[in-house]
Amino acid sequence: MPFDPDPAVFRAVVSTIVPEAAALDGRGWHDLHQVVEALLRDRPESLKRQLRFFLGAIQWLPVVRYGRPFTRLNDAARTRVLAHLENDPIQKVRVGFWGLRTIVLAGYYGRPQAADAIGYAASARGWEALR
Amino acid sequence: VKRVSYDIVIVGSGAGGGTVAQELSPLCRQGLRIAVLEKGPRLRDDEFTGRELEMADALYEDGGGFLTADGAMTIAFGCAYGGSTVVYTGTSMLPPERVIGRWNVPGLTHADLDCRARRFMAENNAHLLEDDLINENNKLFVAGCRKLGYDVQQFPVNIKGCRGSGLCNLGCPNQAKQGTDRVQLPRAERNGVEVVTRCQVLTVGERTIAARVTAKPATAKGDPSPWEPGDYQIDAKIIVLCAGAVNTPALMLRSGMAKNLPRLGYGFTTHPAFIIVGEHSQPIVNFVGHPKSYFVDQFTESERFVLETCMYFPFITAKSMAGFGEPHSAFMRAFPRLQMILVLSCDEADAHNRVALDRTGRPIVEYRFQREAIHGLIRGAVTAAKILFAAGAVRVHLPVAQPTTIESGDAARLEEIATAAEFRPGKTPVSAAHPQGGCGMGRDRSDSVTDSYGRVHGLPWLFVADASLFPNSLEINPYITIMALADRVAQRIREEVPSLV
Image 1 (spheres, rainbow over the protein chains, first blue to last red):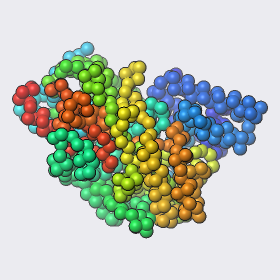
Image 2: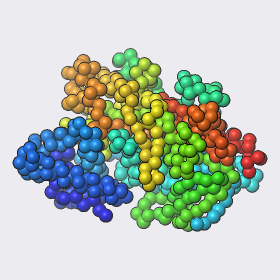
Image 3: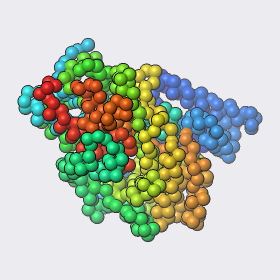
C-alpha cells in the first residue's frame, strides 16, 4: 500500500523543512513524491501508518494554540510547530519528527535536480571530470 | 523444500566471509564442497552508478536506514556480494595493541593478529594515497590540525586505480576499492567455492541450515540468484557465520541458541558518530577525490573520540545535519564550499546494549548512549569545529549547539556553546557504520559466545568469523581486524577438517 499522505499537509511540512521546496513546480513535486514512495515501498505498513498519523497530528495540533490548522499558519508559526516537535521532551515524539524529516530530506535532496541546484556534481570520472 | 549438502557453508560474504572463503578454498581441490550464502545481490560493474538513493537501496541493509530499537541512531552496513567491504572507504588499519590487550581473550595475542593483518593489508594493496590525489577537504583538515598542534595521520587505503569519484560509500563505480568482492571472493570462486546470492539464512540447526532464496525483483539491480527461488534445507558438516554484528547474533538467537549461550547478543558496540560541517568562503574540492584520507586518534584514551575526514552525498549530508528550515538549507546551498569531519566516539560493551529479536524474528539493536560516549561526541564536536575554523571556515554546523550555526567570531566560545544538554536522542543525528560484538570471544559460555578461534562454545561444528567476535569496541575502522580474526578461524577449520568432515 502506498504512503499516500494528504498532499496539502505534506507539502506544507516539506516546504517548512526545506524552504526551497516551496518553489517546486508540478513536476518537481511529482518527482519528490515518487522518491518518497520508493523509499517507503518495502517498509512495514505500520511505519507508513505512523507517518500518516504524525502528519495528521502536525495538521491539527496547532488548532489548540493558534486556532488554525498547520496548513493555514504562516511560515514562522509552522517553523515553531515543527521546532516544538523536534525538541519535545518525549523521545518518541522527537524520533517521529526525525523520521518524517528524513523522508522529506530524501524526497527533496534525492532528486538529481536538487543535487544540481546545490552544485553537487560527482562523477565516476572523478579527477578527470574536474580537470 | 529443496535439500542440498556441502562440507562447509559460510554465511555472509563481507570481510569475514570473504576471507574464510578464500582461506578454505584450497580444500575444494581435495574434493570438499564449499558454499557461501549471501543475502544480498551481486551487481554487475556497470550497475554502480553512484546515484545516492539507488545505490543505497541496492547495497545496504534496509537501504541504509536500519535504526536502533528506539529510533535514535542509524546503523549502516552492507548487504551485497562483498558485504560492507563494497560500501566502506577502504581505510585499512592494523589492530591496536592496547585494545587487543584490553580484550584479554585467552589464546589471542596482538602479535598473532598483527601478523595476519599485515598480510591482508598487502593482499588488498593498502597504501598511503599519493599527495596529488588528496583533495582540499582532506588537505584543509591537515592544515587545521597542524595549526592546532594535533597529531594528524594518513589512512592507508586499499585502492588500486582510483579515479577519485568520491563515491566509495555507494560502491566504487571504477572497481578501484579492493574489497572482498574484488579480491578474496573471486579467488575463492576460481578455486571452486560456490557463492549463492539472494539467499537468506533463516535458522541454523545441528549441522543444517534453513534458507530462502528470493527472486530478483523486476526493477532491482544485480544478477538473479544462481539457485531457483524457494526454501532450502542445506546440510553442512561445518557452518561458519559471517553475517555481521547485527545479523549473526540475530541468526543464532532465531535458532534458539540463547538458552545455552547467555552472552549471545550482548557486548554490542558501534562507534556512534556524527558529522561536523564547516563552510568556507570559496569553493573547495570536496566531493572529488578519496573522501577519507586522514584521522586524529590522540584523544581516544583521554576523551573517547576519533576524528576522520569524510564527505557525503546530498541526502546523507542533509540527514546528518541537525535541524531544518533556513539555517539547514543555507549549509546545503553551500555544498561546494563545505568541509566535513566525522566524529566517532568509542563506546564500551555494557550490560544493556545488545542485539535482540522483534516479534517477527527480525534483528533489533537495543542501544542506549553511554555518558562517556556522549562526552566523546561533544568533545569531538568541539575539537572538529576548532579544526574547521583553524582551516579557514567562516561558519560551522554544530549538531550539539543551539542554534546549530556557529560563526567564526564565536570560535573562542565553542567550549561553552557545545554542551551535553544539547545532545538529545531522536534529535541529534547520530549514525554508525562499525557494528561490533554480540558473539564475543572469551573463556567459556559464562563470559562469551566463542573461543578465540571463533568456535561457538559447545558446538564443535559451528564457527563465527565477523565483527560480532569483538568482545569490546575496537576503537578504529574494523575491517582488517575482522579479516585477521577470520583467518584464524579458517586456520582452525583447516586443522580440524579431518575430524569434522
